Image (cartoon, rainbow, N blue to C red; front, side, top):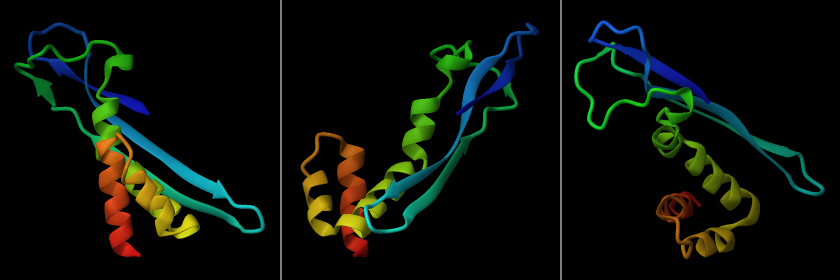
Length: 114
C-alpha cells in the first residue's frame, strides 16, 4: 500500500494524505495441484489541491484512505472467485452467512458465475 498526497491551498508545505494505491497478488496452494494466483490493484488519486476537506484530510501516511481503497479494489472479488473455483459452491454458500457484508456480496456474485 502506498499513501498518496496532495497539498492544501493554504500555502503551507504540509502534505494531506487523501489518496492511496493498493496492489498485490493472491495465491493458493492446494495439495496435489498447481499454485493458483490472481492479482489486484486499485488507486484512489488525491485531488491536485485541497481547498476544503471535512473532516480534515489525514496528515500522516498511516492515516491515508487505505480502507476505502481496499474495499473498492478487486481483492474481495478475486478472493471469492478463487474460493469458488477451488472449493466449489458449498464454500461460497457458507461465506454468504458471514457477518461481513462485502464478503457476502462477493460470494453471491461468485456463485452467479459458477
